Amino acid sequence: MSSNQFPANFVFGGATAAYQVEGETQTHGKGKVAWDDFLKDQGRFSPDPASDFYNQYPRDLELCERFGMNGIRLSIAWSRIFPSGTGKVNPEGIQYYHDLFKCCRAHGVEPYVTLHHFDTPLALFEKGDFLNRETIDAFVDYATFCFKEFADDVTYWFTFNEIWADATNTFIEGTFPGGEKANLAKCFQCEHNMMLAHARAVLAFKHGGFSGKIGVIQSLEYKYPLDENSAADINAAKNEDVLQNQFLLDATFRGDYAADTLEVANRLAAVSGGSIEIREDDLVIMREAAALNDYLGVNYYQSRFLRAYEGENDLHHNGTGEKGTDRFRLAGVGERVNKPGIPTTDWDWIIYPEGLFDLLVRIRLQYPNYKEIFITENGMGYKDPFVDGFVDDAPRIDYVEKHLAAVLRAIEAGVNVGGYFMWSLQDQFSWTNGYNKRYGFFYVDYETQERTPKASAYWFKRVAQTHCL
Image (cartoon, rainbow, N blue to C red; front, side, top):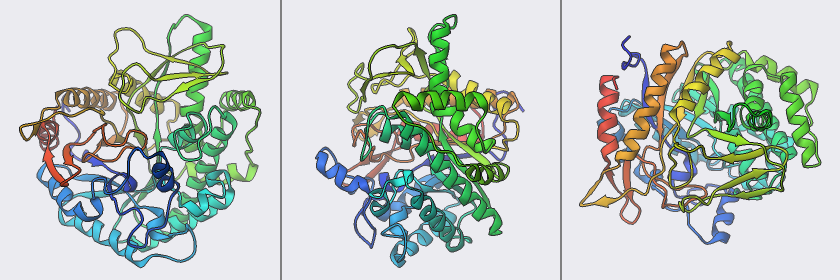
């Protein structure tokens, strides 16, 4: 295989999420989620109609086919199936997803389906979300229902999208509904409980004898010390690596936590005056499931450079695209800093494809029992200029090309990578940024719902069709 050639069976696709694209968030029998009132109370932006995927999906899937994409990441909205999270089902929601998956097949696009993408039904969220073990039970019941109901429609399943993002935005950065700041103990507890829910769903899938494959999606960032010769900076990088990466990767591939992982996790949980409850019977379940994961989804946007930090918590999320406003100084952990010479987006995310290569090789070396990896999200938020009916998003093309090159290098280094899904398929609603941050291959006019392929879509089509950079 030449250095710029992807494997013949490599999947090229675009990624979506139900709440960010569907619209119709409280119609057609769908139950409420915490985001509904949270966004309304903020008064900044509405998830309706977003990209109106609920009604427009035939057009978007036709575009997938036209532009050479043979895979699409979708999520099922839990509250569209079980409006209250448990109990009575919504037949209209069930039929919607049957129709959606059928349309995928008609256009030669394989659906890769996520069961939970930041949208726990409100009734369960109000009881503590995944800090409450009843939600774990409810999730497993919902997942099992979907495995049975959509057995003929779906081959590839993911349990959760970005457990870290769910945990950190709720309990560290405070930007998600019910958000708290700097509660490290709750963050770790949320991560553990969601990984237990994942493990139980994997066992339900495997013991249920369903055909197909299943895994989980983690949002990962390689953590580098700002000064490689500073023990304090190295420790700060290790702290944040355990918080975001190693705790979840251990749970995924070991089914328990290595001694160094637990040492850091327990120390950090104590910083916020709490502890982590990890029961022995949790680990029995997680260990069994760890051997049965078929793949890992990796969402990668950037890496981080850390330096030691001794001060108070100072956290500010850049949700506007006002460059230079993001701050992340976490007591007991460290401070994220930009390294001179490394470019950043308007949202202060560093552009560092080398981190993706390092991350993939790290997984292969540290967790040799992994089976396959999909890049389930990677992309660049950009204030796309729509000029004379066209979007020239050359910076996005450059970003994706460099990250695909990093994937190729990792494949050459022996990492089994099965596909790449750009975030996102079409422009869509962003949880903390609304609509000014665009990611899509296809420009969406939110007033008319017209789709316009961007320059990146034409570029990606050639890569997908030739399997060549």
